[in-house]
Length: 261
Image 1 (cartoon, rainbow, N blue to C red):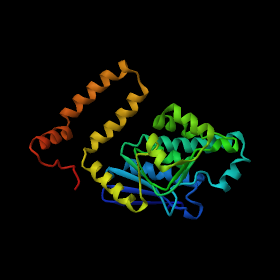
Image 2: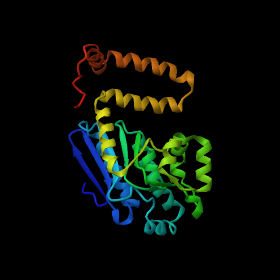
Image 3: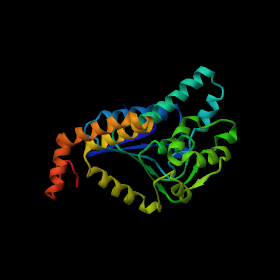
């Protein structure tokens, strides 16, 4: 597929997906959503890819909904709006449930759906001058697609505050409340991303896939339901080829074959 609104590049085991609409601060429309869905599906299926970096071209990560697109959907029927919304929700859950780690390289401000895209990533590293907005209530709508992810990230107390007031969140506050993992100076953004990439690529690919799945399963289940699942997972990993190699490498103070330097 030839993409019109995003860039998809691969270098060795790393895939980088970049929203490429800097002239509108990488705002979302139907085509962007469709192309992102295709790109993340492609990355999921590619066995050579071990990690995905999501970013935006230029000085912004993602400005949320494109104003032209917003004008169009305002005139859509209920059915048309349902279909458009469903596509965005599917995209967010695809990224959230991706079996490979996803790093959001937030190179500037994010608003609405842009906040959603970073929140469904595993690790969020942002420019310390970024601002984050979930202020849809100011125009009479609600960021419904991203509310579950905001609650998971920052908890009910702060989620209620920012969803109800619509107040913009600066990078320092975002890090303090757990909305993002790190706020770093823009000139150090790539260095921090690369350091994190190196840490992840030193880990077992299968173990990473399972730990991501485990987090999601445990989050959705009660204590009694996940006790057996946890015990089974530990046992299966310990006798797996990857687990055996990793433990032996640790004991012999060597590097396992899957640790990329």
